[in-house]
Length: 241
Image (tube, rainbow, N blue to C red; front, side, top):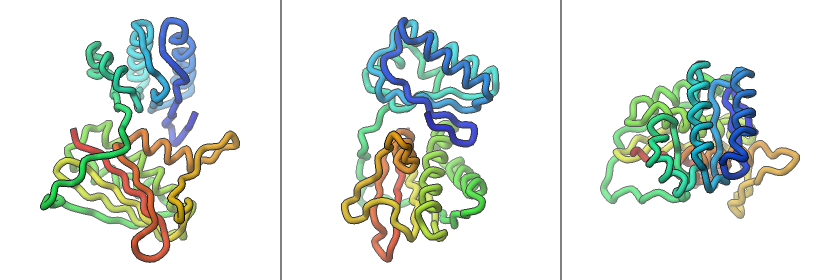
């Protein structure tokens, strides 16, 4: 479980059916009672949801709304998403499908609509996130897409501040079909020689968890060395549906 500023990312360990729905409901109820304002269920390992599972998700989403919060699902497998669509669950709960890790290339000759850049303030990441959220709100994104992209960008900015040298920049480029966010720093928080990204360990590699979260929330995550000078570039892409 990952907790970040009132947002809880809860991994669901397996299928949601009549034998497991009550246990998951109890966990969700405890989080709501504890004041969770945004609950994101990581559904990557869920290959099946039965009617009891759907009823539990709807009831939990209603309880979250009544408490002033939002419950959403990310990393939903294609077959599970298809049944959720048929059951009209996607009309009631924000659902993000499992991404393939690749997005279509930008069409040759396509032009960006606009681009904006700001310095990442190491001592006031909230102010930078607010600026990013305002930029994203100027695009054709749903409120949930804005939230997901802002959360993913926040993870990238946190990594840049933690592993860089305090000179990180964030740039949002608006394209007709996608939002592309780039966070650059002058450090090297992952293996720039091999491109390997740290994986979460039992002891808790928070940066590895942050990268995993980014990959759940956006359509593509690219991490590389900067083309000029030392540092890391994190590029986040969210397609506009």
